[in-house]
Length: 271
Image (cartoon, rainbow, N blue to C red; front, side, top):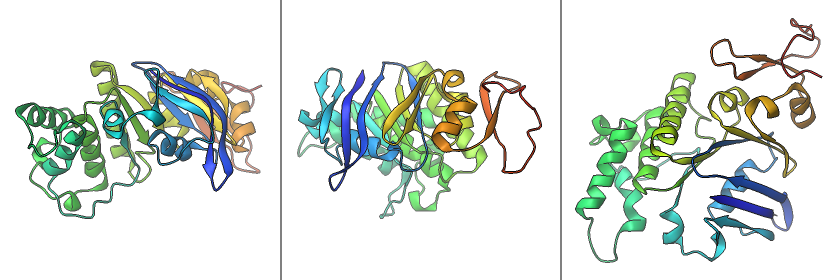
């Protein structure tokens, strides 16, 4: 259980998140969306304790995140950032093994349990064939899979993804999110993802949380949140929302200025 209560946090005394309340229940796949500057990445930085709250608190299973030891947090919460740059030519297996750091005992090497966790994380993410390759020699999509494997090696209960598809082409976007959803469904892994793409959010999320100016504008099922009225109010964009022909999930079609609306008032979610 992740509970965020009246969280205010920002930079240099200027708040970005303003009194944010958010709960992520065990086993959920929650996606946070919002325009640039709405507080999405600031939320991730607060979760990683890179930023300290000016007010409010973050609770992880009822415990104040700010009062927990880093090792304790890392055993429950893992983060995959949008940037995967690695400054050293580690092999893929070495990168994944770094995920075991919170579980290692001081001055002792890894154990059979650690090696088993690394092997399982690589198996789940399909990165076993990449084990001996240098991380610097991989494509962007392969690197992101390795970073997910490293996060899984931590054996977390909550996986936080900060715009993991930002620099990937469509095939790798779908591959990565399919992987995360499979882990969510089969392993019970709780997921909190930051996504820019509203259509991907609609396809993968159990719940969508839409931020505007550091506050929660809407929170609910994708069809309840991704409406034409909400998108106009939050993004300032005129769109038409239709049903996906296969899944039935809402899909957003951008209407450019001066372009006639091809569907008139027939789209889903119009007022």
